[in-house]
Length: 502
Image (cartoon, rainbow, N blue to C red):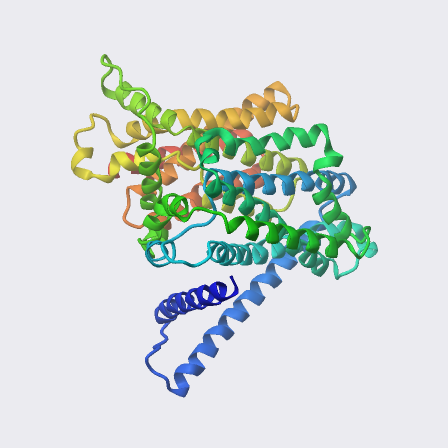
C-alpha cells in the first residue's frame, strides 16, 4: 500500500498544481514565463493573501472579543450547555451524510484510470480522507478559536490568552476522529451492498440527539471534555487521548477500505463526477448543480402524485408546485429548519438588546443563506422565456403559487420556536405575522434576482436595502407598526419589480 499511496499522492499533487495554475492565471500569473519577475509575482500574490488573511483574522478576533463582553453569567452558562449539543449535531451530520452517500468521490478521470487499476482500494480512500479532513480542520479549528475567545471574555482574568491555541490543538484530533467515524460508515456502504438498499438507514443517527437529552453523560462527553480543556479544567493528557482515538479510527478505516468494491464506489460517484466535469460553472451557477442533483434523485424512484384533472389557472400552478415539493420533502424540511433557526437567533437578539453590529450579522446570514429550495419551482417556471408566456398569471401571482408550501413550512418552523420559548399570545401572534412577512420579502428578493441578469449582485442589493430599512426602522423607533409599514412598502416595490420582469 505504501507504493500505491506514493503514486496516488504524486498524481493528486500534479492535479493540484494544474488547478493552482488555473487560478494563478486568473490573477495575472503567466506559468510559461520562467523569469525572475514572474516568480516574484507569485511571492507578491502570496503576500497579499497573507495580509488579507491576517486582517480578516484580526477583525474576527476583535469582533469575538467585543461580543464576548456582552455576555453575562446566565448567558455564558446557557452557551456552555448548548455547545456540547452543537458538537454532537456536527457528528450526527457527518454520519448522516456518510450513510446517505459514501464520502469516497471519484471524478471521471479517477473512474477511468484508478477504479479499474490494480491499485489497493485503501489508497484512494486514505488520500480522499486526508484531502477532506485538511479543509475541515482549518475551518473548524479557527471557528473554535473564535468561539473560545467569545466565551473567555466574561471569565476575565481567570482565563489566559492561550485558550484559542488550546482550542485549535484539541479540535484537530476531534475533527479527525469525527470524520473518521463518517468515513468508516461510508466505507461500509461499499463493502456490503445491503447497507445501500436500506434507504432510511442514514436518518438513524438523528436518534442520538434525543438520546443525548435522556443520557447526557454517555453521549455529550466529547463536547464537554473539549470545553473543559479549553477553559483549563481538564488534564493535559486529554489531547493525547483524543489523538490516540483519532489514530485508531483512521487505522480501522484504512483496514476496512482494503475490502471495498470499486464498482460500487464508481456507481455512487457518477453524480459527483458529472458536477465536477462542469468546472467553474458548477460554482458560478448553483442552480445547474441543484438541477443535476434533482434529476438524479427523480431518476432513482417512481414519480409520486399527479395533477388533478379539474383545476386550472392559479390553482393548477399551486398544485404543480405543491407536488414538486412533496416529491422533494427535504426542501420543506430545510425551509422549516431555516425558519426555526433564524427565529431562535432573532429571539436571542431581541432578548439581549445587542448593538447594531449583531443585527447586521443577522442580516448577512439571512441574505447569504436563504431557505434552500423555496424558489426552486419559481426558477424553473421563469427560466425559459418562451414557455413562461403561456402561464396565465403575472410574475407575482406565479411566485405566490410556487412558494406557498415552503412558506407555510417556514412559518411552522418559526412557530415551533416561538411557542417553545414561552412567548405570550399577543407577542407570539405578532412574531408569526412578522415571520410570514419577512419570508415573503426574502422570497421576493430572490425572485427579483432570478428575473435579472446579475443574479448574485441583485440578490445582495435587494436583501440589503429591504432588510436594512427594517433594521434602521426598528433601531430608531422600536415600533412594530413602523416595521410592518416598512416591510409592506418593500413588498409592494419588490412585487412590482417581479411583476414587470417575470
